[in-house]
Image (spheres, helix red, strand yellow):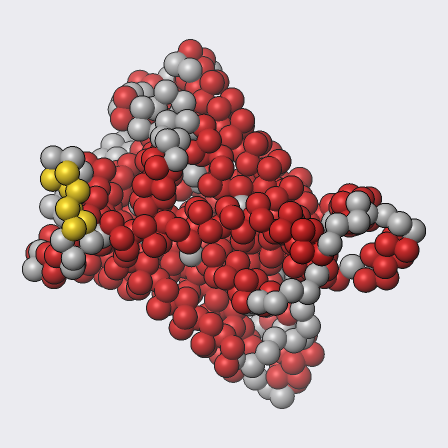
Length: 289
Length: 277
């Protein structure tokens, strides 16, 4: 059993590192490589940057990029704000909180496709939401088939499913804030609202930032609801880039264009992760941990 | 506002939020026990009876299993179980090496491992299709299991835990002549049971919830896993609402059965992913 440390290192590290290299790093390289080729009738030809140039002059790509950015501009601040509101409720110490806490946590155990199926039926013209809205004299609305509503319905579904998950991180952050600081501010006469803005939120900043960036990376790549509910429609109103790439590669067989879109998406994401590291490393260190 | 009135208001806000939050799920569960033609009864005009499973029937669940949902569940359990078992061994070994040995470039390699879990699986799913088809694994179970075994977050969780174990344990065991594998197995693994549960849950849930990757990797759909199976079900039986709800309820129930008793470990695992490299 007396192996040299080198053999030992290779033995213990190789399986995980090889796995990460082949199934995480190599695909990124391969996407770059394949985005430089085009496949016509099974024949692969090198075309250089033509796929990228094609995207620049492709109104379908620009429209899809606009949908993706608009979607993210709404959903990310919304999810972080709601997750924060949930977290602030979650940490309250009131009778019966255990039950409410459990209710807040339930969507974590629900996958996105499950949430989509449930909400699809809830949002039907004859479904639960229209029934409830009808009771107060509204609707019925075509939540999923109207170009005015579909994107916002997807935002609602993904938000319902997602915020419990982000809440957990924020609850952790809130619990790391020493009680004495809030107590001292209270004794100084700060109102609850002032304490939230002047004490809690600044101290929670690193956690909020982490959640925001992690949330952005998830929502940039959101796929299942679009695939299952709208197929990018109606009239392209929900056609996010992830779905556009999927259609290119796996419906129309244009892998080159699909990979070019994926490369653009990953490039945008790497920029976000880089910004995250930059911002978090300059942020004040958290207490404890 | 008096403190009591304020408390009452907060309490009310929490109760209403919690209620609204679980309402869609409640309606789905209740309606999955209704016959299909009574799905939308009690909605126009709206009455609270819409939230009750009446008339009560389990026909939806019977129909789901007659349509082969049982084998879809079994398939997913196999994939998730294999990934969890292999993933625990592979990632714990790597975490052990990172925690105990010094080697040139260690912090750089560890940095790359950390970055690898910041990038979601969806980002690489499409190029991964090319990798897996080069390996000839398209439509094979290996395509679902093997790429998910090595996991940066799991490596990181084990690394973090093993690092906290006092080095004296290792030295003492070395002096008694124990080999590294024995030390890992009889000293480190028993100590790291909570980390094993956290990492195992993470790997399991990841596979249980996988959608895009199985959709791409198994185009023939001979071997269906649960999320894709459910989506296909939705396309096939468009208006069998109660069965769709039933399938959704079952799909949600199985991870919940694991998560509720083990939620502490799951949250610890999540907290690990929030720790900044």
